[in-house]
Length: 234
Ligand code: AMP
Image (cartoon, helix red, strand yellow):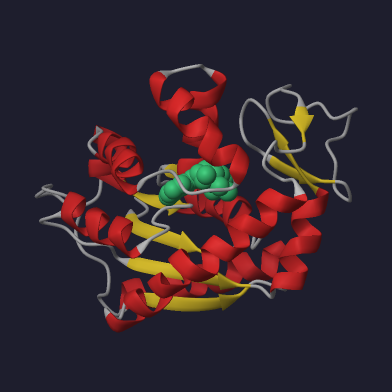
């Protein structure tokens, strides 16, 4: 049995959060919750949430905290999360969301917040070449495309450039990262839950460093038990 965990992965757009979160989710057998993917699915499915979210997303603005918190709260209430934990990707993005997350997790706690650190000029280059599967959210790039003609290797979906990966929307998202999301780093640092990982190496190097940090924190007793489960991780 691989023990579960409650993880948050932070980092600028293009820092590699999506790619690393998928790997962490497989490695530790924990559900991956990506708020951007959930919101894109809602937009694609023309749900009420999708209709509300689309204009914010196209402009690179943040969805209001209460809407995102309600969406995440519903997901965190499901059985797989209670028994295994989660790796959160793209959430929290504001201190208010982080405080809301703490409330949602009570009586448990977050185990670790991992910040993937990458300079802005590197993320700008990465975002410009980023492509994404419309159906399953797998990330590719112009340098590392799918094997056949922009068809997803994993699910056969169409691989496209994200609608909000325009120059203006990217600039706005990076500004918002500095004003809204960067303060989270100090917030988590003060609670002793933050680890910083340099994100400029190869995806394998970054992943290995994350796993080393997570395993050493777990060994030193930094990880709590599952939510409300007496028998440990299932
Ligand atoms: P991402 O795929 O994480 O870059 O998210 C794409 C877009 O979804 C963002 O630019 C926001 O408009 C919206 N979004 C995703 N997660 C959040 C969040 N935690 N809070 C507010 N807006 C979010």
